[in-house]
Length: 231
Image 1: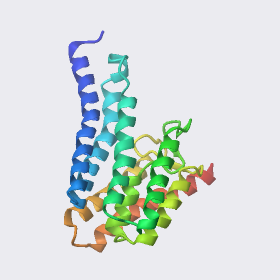
Image 2 (image 1 turned 60 degrees about the vertical axis):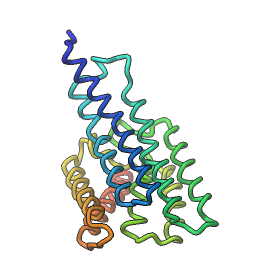
Image 3 (image 1 turned 180 degrees about the vertical axis):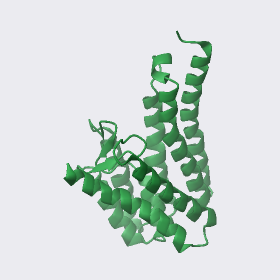
Image 4 (image 1 turned 135 degrees about the vertical axis):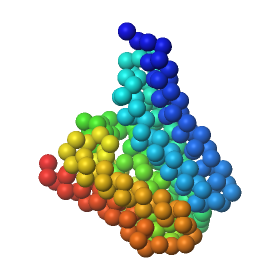
């Protein structure tokens, strides 16, 4: 029997998911004001919401309680905004490549992301992303805050990650994967804390915090190669 409280909790999860769009809009305002640090703090909040809402949905049996609502559809709308469109807008406003490379870079970012979302089996067994997932917010973060916005390096990396969407490497879905779960969680937390501290102290650079963020990224990249060929 579904109680009133069950429905309230289920609706609360959907509202929590949808709140990511509010944070995303604040990120757009920050970009318009050229407040690069604030933009990524808002995007970090979007990422936290996106990381938690699935677990909350399972805990409160959202599909069972509200079968006429599909949280994944809400999630996809917000994800494409926060992981592709807003990072591309940041990339444009921050002038992260030479003018002659700008529109090609934006086309690669947005078209590759849209095509990736259209792939059947984008997520395998709810444990792996097949191909590099749409994480242009992380790519742009490393380009701007870690690599200090090198135009030619930015252009090359956009091409690289655009192609990597369609290379069948298996990138772990940290909150869902069963094998190596605690290892994934540890390196996720390490990388995210490092990235958050880089943002918090920006524009002051701290190599220790940057290394923490890099270690997290290298772990998941290396693990994708290891796990793909191990299978």
